[in-house]
Image (cartoon, rainbow, N blue to C red; front, side, top):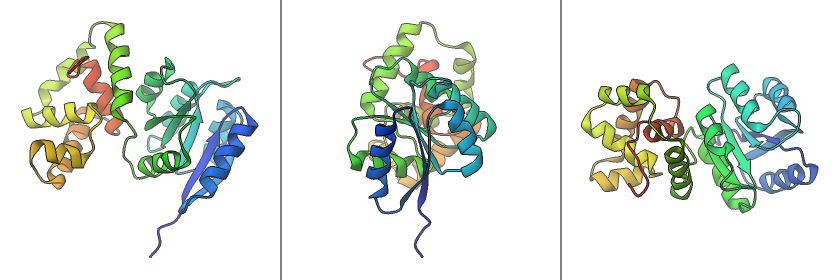
Length: 222
């Protein structure tokens, strides 16, 4: 049986950008663009009305930016999936959006295939967190200074193997890559990741990665 298409809402204040993404995604199998929003406030109302599977969210918009909109959308529905789009790979808002609950991050110059793959990854409940992006996040957390004490304290709840898996997640590795690195079955890695999320009270791999940075389990060059 063919699974239902992934329903996508595109949020950007520039009409040409919205139309471009709509055409690119509309040509991809298994993806339907069900609506557009022109700013963060409009996005919140459209998410409530349309219930998309994935929200493509621009960061820099008038009225209400993508960061605040993401916070409000996640606060209203913790299962909502937001994929952040930005022109700037060093955008200071990127890591804030991930902390707010966004499931991933893409540059606006991503190819049609990268965009579609990103939508599918996020729709499946995984985090879109490439190694190149984690390096920037690590640098940002290092700039901010000392770790957050609650984050460090909660690391004690994890077993040694769970901590090891958390570090690898934060470095941007997939379950398959972690399994190969640890020489264990991929199903075992999935179990470890699930336990880490439950123990730390986190919603997904992206928040797990952010937690690892805040607890200083991952450091520049580490």
